[in-house]
Length: 559
Image (cartoon, rainbow, N blue to C red; front, side, top):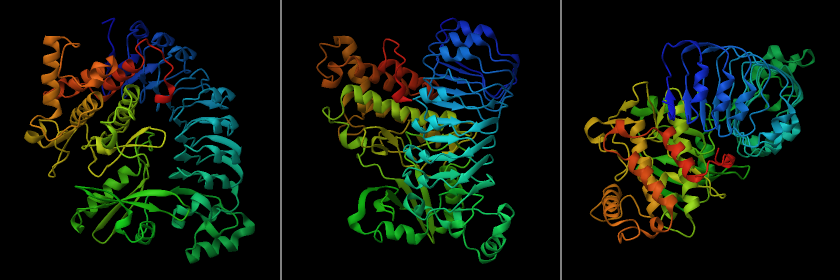
């Protein structure tokens, strides 16, 4: 028990305090106690868990302050304390963490200036608390992708420097007491796909019809007459009666931009009427076009192959999921779905454009993809699947994890795309489908018998991807053996002959211990029995250990 690495007790009926003895399990990588009835304070002894990557105590009845000792968890990547009864101030000790979820507590006070030292933050959720003070100017220096500060008591102006947060894709400052002018610098945030500053009754000004804000539909701006100042009653009346948007209003009180729907005209203009010159990819599920919106922003437009009105209801439901309603989208390792268009029988998805090509194009290139870089790509993909499987409730199964669905941006970061097959999955961890999902060479063996798409099926597909990265071979290369079979045979051969003597090992494996360890991860993920495969959190922990074999916790850029 003392060498336990994963402890998951979620969705039970445990009561009483969180045992302080858990702090003695120093090998723990993940501790998940969410959705129980634990009460009392968080034991400071958890600060002894220096190997801990995930700590999830959400949806309990925990009270007291967040212990400062959690700052000693030097490996901690992901902290979820949402929906408890925690009080006190924001803990400035969490300097290395990447994902912080504190929504739904009773935390109060100002956000400390020390937040500027938390340089690994990618997602910060502070909603539904009692925080006060101004928007901390130090926050604009952080590489945040998601910032949620809704339903607090923040006040003062939203700093115009917010326009320098170039990574920001999701911003929610609604239901506070912010004042001053509308932050026109938001027009400079090219990645921004969702923002909400509604119910801040002291914000005024115009929404500038310029820059990136031009890509938002005017109907996405919400205004309610009762929030307009008295000296603009006529204007408010005119706006309400004519149906005109707040785009043209002199005083704006409520903003909620949720860019999820594009008009057919938008799509036609962006793709030059779906001209052949714009095609950048074709697949079994549709054709992908490179598009350009009026602000110069490039997008990837997928025109789905399967058309017909019979799937309209399901398509709309899935778009509701994939556009982020109910989930903490976007994620830095998932290609952002900007929106969608349903025009007659035609179904179109609009994604962010990733210009570095797909992993499939470079997986055999040992010069462009060094051994170190291959581990980083595996970690990026694993992080995306951890988010879909473990951080979305209910879970989402991708159903088509493969090298061509992993795109590389200009900095080499990997992003998972193609959610045309993704589905919400209930607690049963599976989804019965009448449509074949997946790609030959990546599909788990049990799918042919059960027709159930599961998270463990995604794990299998990831295992094949890990094998491709480790060997430089493709999942299916035209030979008699698929990569999984080939790997099993070669590993048995190398065990008999010894690694150095084995003639069948690829150059990548002979020259790198890391690639050998990555291949072993792939083998574990492709076990024939689904229950014997690790989950994606366990997989990510293995990969980080390969990347940092001596336990160096300085891997914030992977968060």
